[in-house]
View (tube, one colour):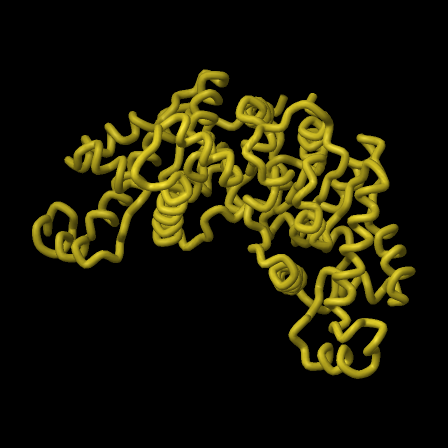
Amino acid sequence: MATSGQERKDMAYRIITVSRQFGSGGRSIGKKLAERLGYEYYDKELVKQVSLATGFAPDYIEEKGEYAQSRSKWAYLFGGLGTAGVMNGMTPSDYLYTMQRKVILELAEKGNCVIVGRCSDYILREREDTLHAFIHAPIPYRTERIVRLYGESEQSPAKRIADKDGKRRVNYEHFTGRTWGAAENYDISLNAAAIGEDNCVELLYRVVTEE
Amino acid sequence: MATSGQERKDMAYRIITVSRQFGSGGRSIGKKLAERLGYEYYDKELVKQVSLATGFAPDYIEEKGEYAQSRSKWAYLFGGLGTAGVMNGMTPSDYLYTMQRKVILELAEKGNCVIVGRCSDYILREREDTLHAFIHAPIPYRTERIVRLYGESEQSPAKRIADKDGKRRVNYEHFTGRTWGAAENYDISLNAAAIGEDNCVELLYRVVTEE
């Protein structure tokens, strides 16, 4: 919700943004919450729309949409030469952020929905009808979970977590000027390991519907 | 709870630590939660016990217990001269922290309770039977609240908030090595303005009792 001085108690939230640490289960919680509420769930759909708007491939958007390396020389070179005009002199990551922002604002206008990641908490911060959630969990819980869900890879699970979270942090702080993972950015933050995934869905459902 | 990889679902939490931004209503939420649960509530009682253990005046403990200025020259001078022996060469703030820590560990052993502030989340981080909550709120909500509850003072409300939170932050980071207000330090963090004070109590009650 927006940072007003008033308590807000008299209607269900129309939009929920779910931000999350890598491997915490935030995406899964967001999806279950959308099903429980009968709200749209935007994740792949958002990628598709951004792809249509930008011409970038879905894979590129998935990879770069939350993990912009905005300070790489390559990005500046690419931004300055190959695509001048289309991207209006912006780096690809700045251009992608701008288009993602536009799509998120449009989706929020369309109707009730749950939006996962992509700085949606910041982009929709002024809307009174929006609840901002953050899901996190201790490293051992996330380690076990990512190996179970995504399998082993060359990188150790701990390294994958540090890498993904590090990139999300840089991306978030670059575009929002806020500290990633600070409780005060969100209306509710939950430790999925302590609370349990289904309990997180239940608690969020209660907060959204004011039950 | 401790940072284990397991979900924890099978018993009520015995201890709740409540950390909070100044003026957010965290203390009030902690007190109501303790009443609702029938748990002990430690705030003044904790100060009294620390006073008995240290000989420091209750007012001094209230003022310095969460707002240590551990780098002041005065503190080092005092630590090195006047009280050598009693404080074992520690600065008064380090000594106070050590004694507070001891009292908090003892109170946690005694029985079901809610403990507000004083790095209790960090001090009790290894206990599986402990839930860690953080209460925050946007500045306008806190401004209105502190003027209503504590009255006007020479300092503007915004200045009082910045001052108190700044000191809590320095104190917390000095003694714990963690970032103050980071969601991942807590099991549940709530925006008291968005959720509402009584709803915060209700949500915490449900999480504690697994209802």
